[in-house]
Amino acid sequence: MTAEEDVIIAVMGPTGAGKTTLINQATGGELGVGHGLQSMTDSIQIASFEYGGRRIRLIDTPGFDDTNKTDTDILELISTHLAAAYKRGHRLTGLIYLHRIIDNRVGGVSYKNMKMFHKLCGDDVLKNVVLCTTMWSGVPEEVGAQREEQLQSEFWPDMIRKGATIARHDGTRESARRIVSHVMSLGGAPPLLIQREMIDDGKLLIHTTAGAHANEELMRLEQLYRKALEDAQGEYQEALAKKDLEMRRMVTRERESFEARLKKAEEDRVTLQASSKAKIEAMERKIRELEEGPGYKDSKNGSLFGIRKKLREQRKRKAGTCTIA
Ligand SMILES: Nc1nc2c(ncn2[C@@H]2O[C@H](COP(=O)(O)OP(=O)(O)OP(=O)(O)O)[C@@H](O)[C@H]2O)c(=O)[nH]1
Ligand SMILES: [Mg+2]
Picture 1: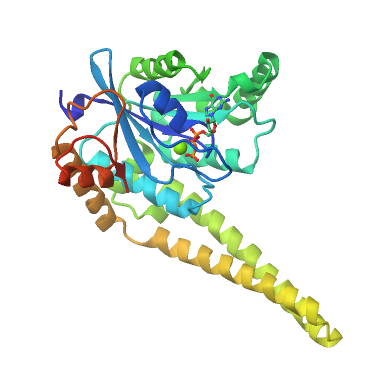
Picture 2: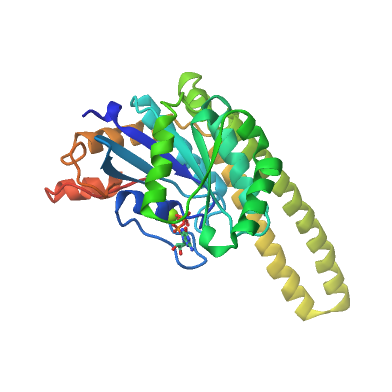
């Protein structure tokens, strides 16, 4: 079976939504699952298994608002991978977007992830998207059903109208595989918007729909930080006038914190404006090396693929496990 014939499904959603857990349940694999407040998956990993006579590859992605990486880092990582895979001829079968039903309100992080997801996908691919809620064991059924209703009517109506379907994951292996089967039944997906924009149209990340959205958000933050710095400057002068040493120390710490955040936001905007060409080519090379390496096409159930680990293992003359980027 060639890589082109493989079923490839990307799993996305906020950190802690249960992406890696669902993938492990489906594949029987052992990708690292988070148990603290820290984000767990900060790279792209691929786990694969045989199902219904086909090789299924599930792509595990980090969520936006990761504790270790900025949103720009995550966007760059995901878009580079998607673009390089598209250039290599890998077509996604579909995408699973996860959301925790235990969350009693859709907060900023969840909303940001949903928005980014839609902007990365575009509209054409939505018929191959499953919006899936997780952690149903953590809420009474009727409470979960109410929240699901609210997601459908307030947060997902646009995606649903354009073809996305809804699913519940009950945390079992059967449920994980049922969701995978459902994605497979939807037929192959057209390219994602980010893939068309970056590869077919040769756009810089900042000029893509998702990149432009990220840029706007960074500009908004920069404005906030500049205003905070102005205020801090006023407070500093006040502290000087009052000869209040403690206040001066406090304001200085505050100022340093805002300066650092402003600097990071400015750097992130430079990242968005940079050409991704070299990075996409590097990622493409990694993907090719992985495909040509031992064990890629005939890996056992639950095996995990990621480029770095894979290359390490190849050096050790072993097939099996790795992490992309
Ligand atoms: N009760 C319950 N807990 C779950 C379920 N799925 C995941 N969890 C737990 O939720 C936590 C986060 O799960 P992960 O699979 O690491 O979430 P993730 O989306 O991969 O998170 P990141 O890698 O940080 O983006 C872990 O403690 C899991 O054990 C579920 O269906 N039910
Ligand atoms: Mg994870």
